[in-house]
Amino acid sequence: MKKSLNSKNHSRRSPFSAAASIILAALLVCAALLPGCAGTGHQGKIRLLATVFPFYDWAREVAKDVNNVEISLLVGNGADIHSYVPGVSDVAAISTCDIIVYAGGESDAWVKDALKNVPAGIKKPVEVTVSEVPGVTLLAEEIKEGMQEPADEHDRGDGDHAHGDGEGFDEHLWLSFENAKAAVKAIASALSGKDPENAGKYAGNAEKYCSSLDSLKESYEAAVKDADTKVLFFGDRFPFLYLTREFGLDYYAPFVGCSAETEVSPSTIVFLKEKAAELGVSKVIVLPGSSRKIADTVMSETAHARDYTLLTLDPMQQTPAKDAVANTYISVMEENLRVLSDALSKS
Image (cartoon, rainbow, N blue to C red; front, side, top):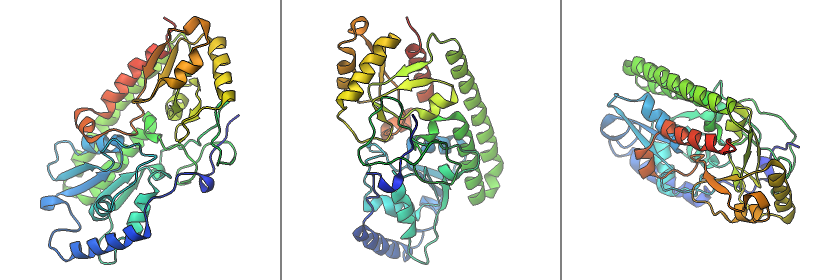
């Protein structure tokens, strides 16, 4: 059974407050009175701000070898995007950059709040709202068989959402290679609009990068084709709906990807134990930094897998700035491919 989430009843709310709006407005009015503080970045550079690591890295690739673009990661403190609370400095940065790249879901609704509060007279940044980019496919969060349904959410019905819906979609849209390519091209277009002289470089970099994404996608397709099983088993939240849909994989998990739940209901534990036994599961996937408590509970009574293998897949939803500098979207997805290949192998 598939269910999408009703965003109107969702527990996540924009943390942007009226008080922060007043403070921001005051800061921006002061900034507008100082030469060079609004409109463009430091030393006349185009200032691009990305909310999460995948968008940051895509912009970095598109602007490669162009010296007049300054790219910053907004949520760079390692916080989970679903629980991130912006400070006044964050919303001020949003309102004074040239280009802002964000998903456009419930977790970053505060970005739109910040943009709405930009005082008159200060030029608003160009928005690349990835969920609204043509060619990006949005998937509704689904409550799969056996999965624990959040207590405060209601059924909105099945099905995918066309771009621009803005409600109830799974926000981990960067885990689709096709979505990634569409977003990369949109970022190149936004940069070209701000910097026509380097439009050819942006377009060329985007084309080259999309070819790299195609090559990596082919590697994923080959790994899935040769896999012993087509089912992934999670002992954690499940933010990989886009990835599994793109490659025809099935999965079982206790929570949806955006769930704030930490305690698993007895019925969900019983279901997962029975399913693990039925499928002969010996490998369980968790997210970076997660406890193995749920996996241990599920697998403890599964006779064939008391010494099960714990694997980690990275959904890139809480990448700290230091890791963003050291890694790339492709390097993380290459490591995810290695882990995925292991998870789909019976050996």
